Length: 182
Image 1 (cartoon, rainbow, N blue to C red):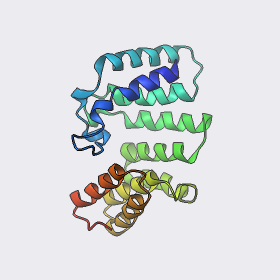
Image 2 (cartoon, one colour):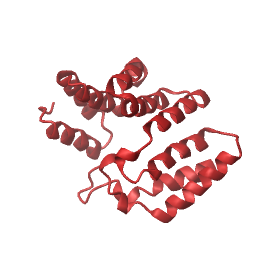
Image 3 (cartoon, rainbow, N blue to C red):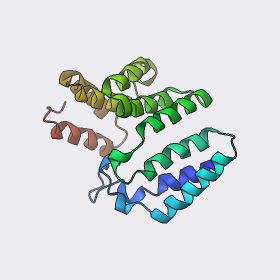
């Protein structure tokens, strides 16, 4: 039930994930009017039903995270503290550096970039070859005004990008922030 809810909730955003040129549209920038409302309702009902079983597993927790995103009508309404708490629960059930990185991202949104960076930096060794680690670090460093370090992290993210769309998204972020691209 949790897996089905997760799949539905993730799939609801498909029409908003890419722009007309195939570029990645980040969650905060997505046109939420493109999200599939009937599918969201079905996914939310499944999450609520799964939670009532009081037997949380990794899929139920991931679905609950997706549900908090789906329930936010605008990006600023996202319950980042709730998402951070759910990632903390997921870390206990299914520990991995990637889950910890996602928690760091949520904490960075809920408690500020310094708190997020404090959780992300210890993950440098296991995630050094991971695009999203360097992208998150770059974004957090930018918010802290540490431009040189942000530029370096984003340059590493571009080098590790798995697709041209990922690399272009980071380059666009650098351009938008008036930082010279690596």
